[in-house]
Amino acid sequence: MELKLANSQKKVELADDIFACDFNESLIHQIVTAYMAAGRAGTKAQKTRAEVSGGGAKPFKQKGTGRARAGTIRSPLWRKGGIIFAAKPRSYKQKVNKKMYKGALRSIFSELIRQDRLLIVDKFTIDEPKTKVLLKKLDDMKVEGSALIVSDAVDENLYLSARNLSQVDVRDAATAATDPVSLVRADKVIVTQAAIKEIEGLLK
Image (cartoon, rainbow, N blue to C red; front, side, top):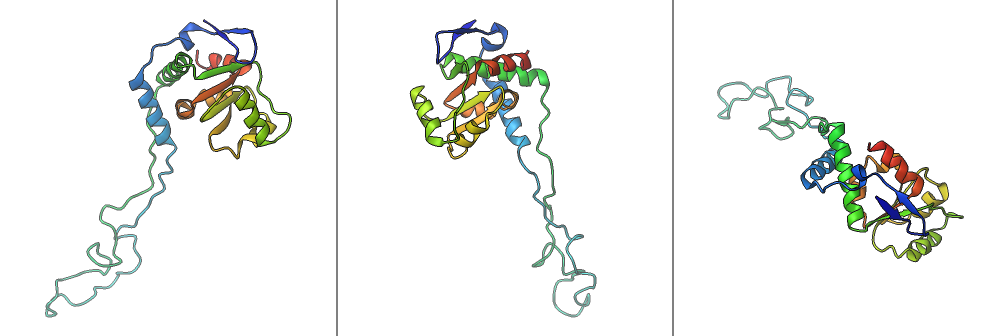
């Protein structure tokens, strides 16, 4: 398939088996869920009755007090006691095959093209690290809403210009080809010609 560059009359040739795939919603949902789950810290931790300090001695004698018998002040039934089913650090990662992951990303890029949300440019650079210069460039391209800019190598001026914009993100090709959440979330995905060829090679 051939796509016209957004900022020139040139065209770029793309592989149909990567950028003209069917939309597989269930697979994309699975990959996006797995990607977001892998980003969870999983550092939540609570103490069981064995880990709470104190409670070595029996708080009062077994009989004659009129109270319910107790063996430790760190029982989960007591104030400042341990937690019965205490949360422990864990990993939320989900097993995803490489073939499934690549298939989902192919489907995402194909759908971006069908929805006219993917803009391919010959290059995307900023002469000076100024946010207003980047905004002017995006405005000239009639980009509204959130935007993901993908380059073969992230330009420092471009990164510095975009870091104060909550709706604009800058990635290199290798990162964008493995981040389905950013691709799905962005209203427009702007990719340089060199980057789209690199992504094509990564998704083969």
